[in-house]
Image (cartoon, rainbow, N blue to C red; front, side, top):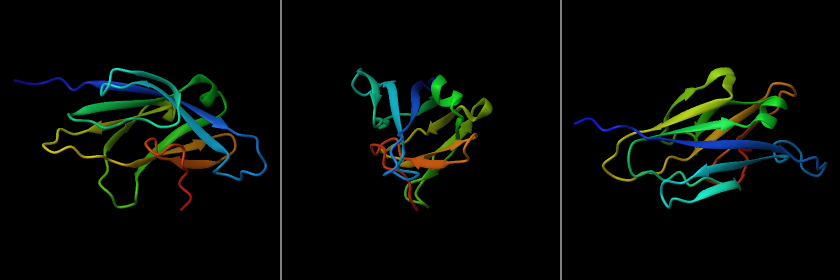
Length: 139
């Protein structure tokens, strides 16, 4: 018997902090709004995501209106740390969303990754791991 693969949706707000003491990429933060299938709770404007999965699940990360109006896109994902196992992804139209595809596993596994945001107006690029509370990738 075939089983359906559920999808969860995470809305993303990219927040630029106008603080001269915070040079790029530290001047950018993100807030996540989502419902967690793990505890049934909704979260609004959280600084990290609960992405632990116990079965095959697609997660659609979608930028909000203000973020896209300010030029932000989701360019890609990268494993954290580099070389770690990576999830398959599918980019959405105009790079305003990206879907990660969590496979069916026999043993629970956490996939850490950076979402790489690119601003089409300023050219700024920043990577933030959604599971790590706005810690930018400063490699």
